[in-house]
Image 1 (cartoon, rainbow, N blue to C red):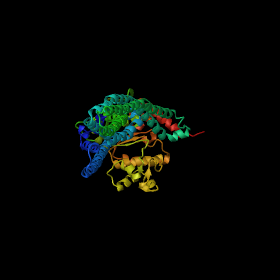
Image 2 (image 1 turned 90 degrees about the vertical axis):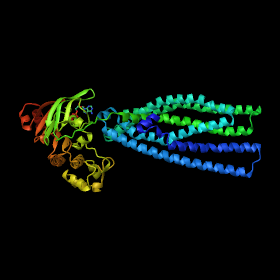
Image 3 (image 1 turned 60 degrees about the horizontal axis):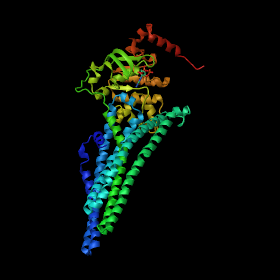
Image 4 (image 1 turned 180 degrees about the vertical axis):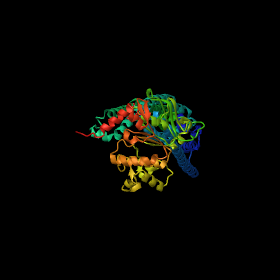
Length: 575
Ligand SMILES: Nc1ncnc2c1ncn2[C@@H]1O[C@H](COP(=O)(O)OP(=O)(O)OP(=O)(O)O)[C@@H](O)[C@H]1O
């Protein structure tokens, strides 16, 4: 666990050999010291009369140790809390930043529950380990050591009986750790699966309601929750008996201690005073020893939290160039590109050129690879063969920051954050002023509807906020793109799901946005791209034909076929 924590928190060994550890040691010494005084008191009571000056001395001593214990306990706690919280905050930021740099393939292979669990629950668990469990466990170990030494000093024969509990109980503790390690790993996995399904359930609640799919009928969630319940019970069921055995071993050692002490008393080889103080201190020893077991159990339980975070941090981000090149212009070239998701081949030998400030449209049947082409331009994925270039520079030679700063990507499904309209538009450029936000909204044809919202630009939208129509959301996302002012614009079927009124507004906004930019647009409705400089028709991951609208309509190819179909479907109605 320590190695895992060091790895994920980017800290070296000194974290645990630092001031906090020193404070914990002093705190424990101050908590054991009164027993030395007590030993003295009891011994004196039995052997000599005690003078007032001794009573005063012991009282002052007790108070002094109590204050010392309190002060160092507070210092240790503060230190641990400060360092722990700061490290965890750094870890959260690092995780967020790391996730941003990972290729989309990572998000596809991982389940959503896994990722959110690593970011939220697992980080919380590591924080709990850092700020509570680990310091308390270290404290208990130090307490065991100090009390053990004290017992040896008071009576080594009885100390042997107490200390024999260590080699007897520790193997049981290690055994329980082994069982817990396996079981809690399984439990963590089923927890991640269940949270993934739960998230899916909540995200799709509208669909589930419409089709009357209730929780129990939503089988995968039901089964995942049942599996999580069973795995949780199994962790307890497998580890608890061993932990009870561990506790029983310690209890038995105490009983043996009582028998041994009584035997020595009867044989007059032990004084009552020594026996009394020995029993008191040995109780402290056993209590701390049992706590070590409890903390170790909790620690083992949380090891997987650290391991899961480590797994995420060890995922390789998209390679950044050692010496980045700044492209001279914003033309886009696909040079014999081959690409597939995993083993599934999607794009086959795709080559095309979009001149700087040119407008190229991608059309083709559903699943032909249009969106995949856009996602390769922003490096959501890397090509398998060939290259994608911007300004004749391979995009792998451009830093991801430089690359993304040059591109605005407007998706069909607009994602809004649960935040104000202003904050949602500011996503395009965090440094923009409010006046610039308003200007972008005006250009994107959304200023008038924003003004009618209950709190205008301060209205919270997205999940939990005011509901916006598809067209309104789309125009907000175009306002983001206006604010970003990137020289390359990628549009993925932005008007596909809009009614004609909204389509007109969005089209108007896009026409303004696209001015003087390199634009790649995906469109299903061919009439919207008639004026494109160049149209690329894709079919089954390859380029079927290309040219201007007029050239393609005059031909006998797929485009002409799609055009005819759309013309015929133009006036369809429900009969
Ligand atoms: N993340 C992904 N993982 C695996 N396969 C994917 C992924 N995204 C797309 N695909 C597959 O790649 C193929 C091309 O998808 P793509 O979205 O590029 O097509 P498209 O032409 O944009 O389709 P549409 O017009 O329906 O949006 C499809 O068969 C799709 O199932």
